[in-house]
Image (cartoon, rainbow, N blue to C red; front, side):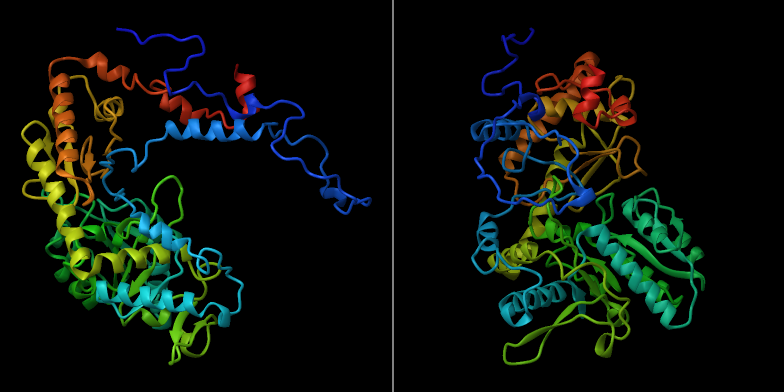
Length: 501
């Protein structure tokens, strides 16, 4: 049955929306600025030579345009994100309210330290709880996100070896690692050597041991790993690495699964980034601001980047900003200023509103929800590895064999069902991977609906309804794209679009 056709292409409240550049008209504006009294052109060669191509729109046009576009966006406030490895969960509105409080929302990074004592105290308190939660003695607050945190940790490892007069050149990285792990190691000048995985989706301990030598600077490992499994030999690997003179960097992207249950410091970790924008619910996705503080062991703490906050007693705080004195071993400054203040406020609000028992329950419920999905789908889908999982349920595409339907087809069909697709084709060690992370904020009813939809799609795939999957999505503003052509020949500007037409 074909969809009803309308004159303008609108479908009820979902309107066919033009590009904002197509809507503009000469001389139309939402503001009325007075004429300037400047007679002299001070811009010199930087002066405008022609029109800059901005559309002329009234205020109602602008508002309506972006409201209409917002209806086309999928959001965590709109529905369920089974997006494994990204921890897309509800962001409590209390956190947003606190981040906008007067005196916090309008801080400026160039204010004198004497005028931001409360902000420095807030950073210090958050740093304290990050260290307490992870069991680590030091933390660098400035990294901007997870990959930036990795860079911070590996730079500290490199600085520690250089301080010891060593020139180690190798970093070990498991095959199932996040792609940023080997990229970070390579960016810091290290040679990356892959550690193979076992048939159970875990690091091959014997292979790891065989790779250890006096050229190994460290290891980058995610725990729980990207297969959604806890590495049971992690402490033994850390001890073996330390005996070989290396340092252990742990990717903290999956801290949501062990929060309040396991302290990375007790596992032998030397450095680990914490995605405040994942674990502690600050906004994630859509290019929103991230924050990736890095906790350090006692061995690496002296090499942490500046600046950091210290309390001088009686509620007086200051920033250590220069590589001298107590920071003389620091590898230097990683970025401008001190970090993402808005994320700090949200993360601390999240911690304080949950309390120790609440943070522990975050991990317990996240793992429970993932295993609930696993238990209810493994009879019709192909579980990647035996046993229970942590916070992510991982499936292969084996159950689709002979159907003509692919992992990508399942993801596209989910869109028509009103569900954001799960992570697909990652981790790379699993063929046709479907990585599902429900997080702790989803109700059983929401999970049951997702499970019912997945079982329905599997049934249709096995019944030979191949064309339906190849056509999906059919209910979106735009149908299925030729993604290969779009990637190879993207139309990046309005002028190019006009030429293409």
